[in-house]
Every structure is written in C-alpha cells, then in structure tokens.
Image (cartoon, rainbow, N blue to C red):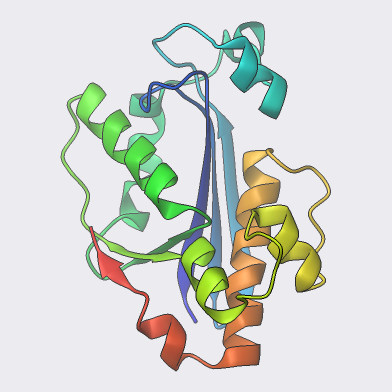
Length: 177
C-alpha cells in the first residue's frame, strides 16, 4: 500500500485552530518519510485541549502558520493520493477548515479511516480508540496525542490490517474528498 497518514492536534474546538500536524509517508507497506510541525493558530487556546496534547500558546509562539507550511504539504493532498487518519472525520475537517480559514484552494483526495476499518474488522474490541487498536495489533504508541506518534500508529494500523485481513475490505472503505 502507498498512502500518507495524517494527524492534527488543535488549540480549541475551532477546527481551524491546528497547533500541530504530522504526515507519515508509506510506500510498499514501509514508512519511508515523516513530517512534523508545530503550528501557530490564529485562535485562543483551550486549557482542555492543551492538557490533552501538552501544547501551549508559548510553545507555538515562533511556529509557522498552516498557511506557511501548506506549499510544502500540498502535494500529498491530490486526487490520486490516499490520505489515512484514525477518525478521519476530525482530521479532514481540520484540514478543510484550515484551507478555508487561510483562503487556500480546496484539496481533493482519497480518504481511508482506520477508526472505521477497525470497527468493521475488529468488532470485539472494547472500543476503537487509537491506543486500544494499537494495543490489539501490538503496535507501540508511546506518546499518544503527539501528532507524529499518532500518525505513525495510524500508518502501522493500516499496514497491519492489510496484512491480517487483506486489501479487499480496506478498498471498500475508501472515499473521496
């Protein structure tokens, strides 16, 4: 499989408040590249969000904005590209909200959600949170809610699901954005 796994963390409930982003590039079922950046949002921080991911306003004071990094990451979000996330509804909504907020062109790509594939392929788990699925598949997730650690775990989940369950049920879960 070839895809890019993504994960965002946000400063608040506002979807355009991304404070970190990670991309993990997979080619032929191997992680071949990684990208991680803190981001400076144009919003106030929620204490609840900061407590979850450990990123505070002072941590991103000198970080680039989403608009600053978009030219670097835009090539990963094209029609022929597969973007994977655990709870893709959230991560894709953050991406779309950031594009809208900064008046950037919309991105169109294929999406696969490992939360949904996990619910379908592993129905007996107590829940399908990233850490639960990672544990069930013997995938290390040492720093949960760090965007890079979460994106790596997501990539490894999809690779492992492909190995265990085959590609057919995964292909059925692909949708277009």
